Length: 108
Image (cartoon, rainbow, N blue to C red):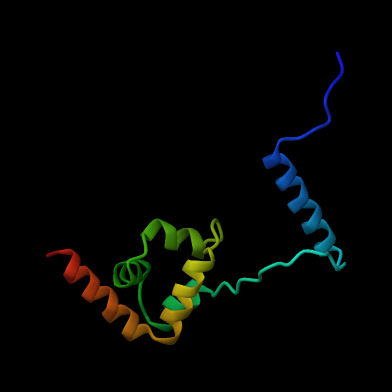
């Protein structure tokens, strides 16, 4: 019985991504477009605001386990979360106020 060397579309996509990562890691140019996401240091942001993890979590409506995962390097914020963290860093009071308003509306 002959083995097939064809992959599923999902496996092909994963293989293609790994090959692109390999090319990129060698500093070579690839023909694909990539998006670079700036991931801010959430621990640094939190400490600058003098908030504990629990206080930061509650103030900005971020699950405590998620925040801890980010700070401990077990998880990395995705593009949306990174944008949210950058907003918190730049406009901490306004973002907190918006979260409080949202919580008040949700409670109605």
